[in-house]
Every structure is written in structure tokens, then in C-alpha cells.
Length: 375
Image 1 (spheres, rainbow, N blue to C red):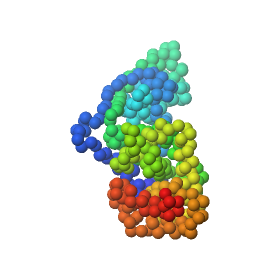
Image 2: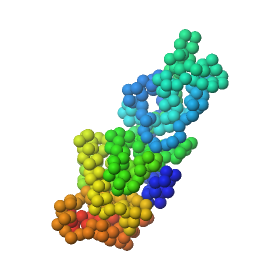
Image 3: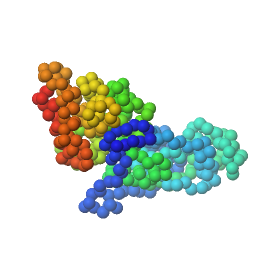
Image 4: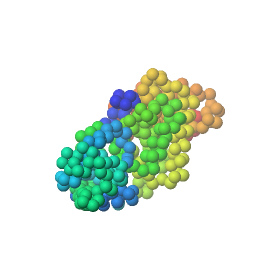
């Protein structure tokens, strides 16, 4: 169970913190990693940023921000010609996602936009009180020094596997709060798919059904729940294709990353449909099962169980209220019978995301679907 410092407790999310990857055993590791060295001037990076080609505003839900003292010392170090630690970017076509160096770049670009004045410089104290646009006349050499300053970077390039990207992300971010998998996915696969998912978790339907408050969830566990539901929904409804063929489930990490890539390619209309499906299933879950939905024994005092969440949501996506009214099924009791069965409990224990147990728990919940609508 993930207790977490944010107070959000969800069962069966331990894999969020397990960043190790399963590399292709047929190839040496060094043949699967493509990292190139590249130098940029700060002016060049700032120009790319203004064109939307440098991305660092991905929301890691992290609290730590640089203090003013750190910002001023960074700029003074550059003006003195001191080297900075290496930056890491993930390059996708002509877009650069910042893997390591977010705080440094955000500070520098903020200074370029004249958003703060230098203070408490110890060596270049004559620059105290000056903003970037004040560095003119006899100080113009400092403006040129900033713009021309070369940063050394490593570009993570295709075909570096996504699972190795997770490990690289983990290694270069160990100085601060260790990111979990969903936070890393939010950076690596940022786009309208993740944005749609993050919108779902802010809806009243999500909050009512889960009792998870967005302002408390600083580690993106709520968006992880919705990501898993949509991944299985798309998988079982044959909406994931790979090389023109139906996607075959291999492991949960690959499924989630493949799903996020697919969602980013969807039209706005399609994304709206996924949003509406998610919200509808949340509302139906709450209305038909009541308080305690998504929890073991359907008891409100228990934490949400990730696997009960995804299977219950999938059940709701496959039934209609009109079909339910035609039966004498008490849905709450029927769901309770499934999630308390030995078979289901074994499918949400160890190795729960392996092929056998994953398919089995959805099959068990699918039996209810068949009873109601002949799915």
C-alpha cells in the first residue's frame, strides 16, 4: 500500500516507485541507448523555448522551488564564466523535453524576461539591483555573456526504449524528490492525452466517487488510476493498434506508455469522448454501488484499491441503466460477491499485472457484464 507523504492512500500502487526496466535481453544494454552530446547557447535555447520547442512546464507536482539566493548565484556563476552541470533533454523531432535542468532553465528564462533583479551578488556586486534589460552601456558585456553562454547537454534520442528512459530520468533526478512512474510519464508523454486525464481527476464526479481531493494529490496517484482504466478500456475495446494489428498486452508499463502515446494522437473530439466515458463511469459507480465503491468489501473506511477501481470502471463502461432495470440484479451485492471471492483476491495480490491474473480479474467482473447486457 502506498501511504505517501501527501495523505493519498491507494492500495496496489507499489509499482509506481519501482523504476527498474526490463531491457531486451537479446541486445547488450549499450546498443539500446542512444545519447548524443550537444552544446547550446542560452540565447538559442531561449529562442526555442519561445517557439514552444523547449518543454519544462510539465507538472511534476513537486513542491521544492529554488530560493532567490540560488537564482542569483546561478546567474552570477554564468557571468563569471563558471561551468554548469550537464543538462539532459529528451529529443523528439525538434522538441526538447527537459529531463534534468528545469530549475536552472526556468531561472535563466525568467531573468531574460526581466522578471527579477539581481541581489546579494558577492563578486559582481556592481550588478545588484539590475535586471537583464539594465545590462546595457558599460554592462552590455554581461548581457552578451549570458546570451552567448554555452551549456553542455546530453540528448536522449530514439530508439532509446521508454523503460530505459525511466531509469535515466531516475538517475539524474536523485538529488531532489524521487519521481514516481506517473510523474515521469507526465514529462515524457506530456500532451493533450495527459491533460485530458488530469482534467478528469478534477471533476466533481471523480471527487465524489473516490473522495480524493486534487489539492492533496501531489504525486499524481489519481491520474494513475484514470490512466490505467483508459488503458484497459482501450485494450479490451480493440482501440489500441500496433503496426496495423491489435495491440497485445505484454506488461503494464508498456501498456500505459503506449496508451498515452495513442491518446496524444487522438483528435479533440475523440479525447472528449474518452473524457465523457470516464466521467460517466465514475458517476455510475457512485450512483449504483454507493459509498465504499472501489474499496475492498465496499467499505468506505478502506483505501481505494487500484485493481477494484479499474475493473469496476470497466464494468460500468459495458452496461446500461436500461439493461440493468430489466434484471433483478442488485449490482452492489453482485460486485461485492466478485471482489470478495478467492479468485478475484488472488488476482489482485502478487504478480497481479501478469497476463493470467490481469485477464482473470477482468473476466470475473465481465461475468456481471454478461448477466446484465449479454456483453
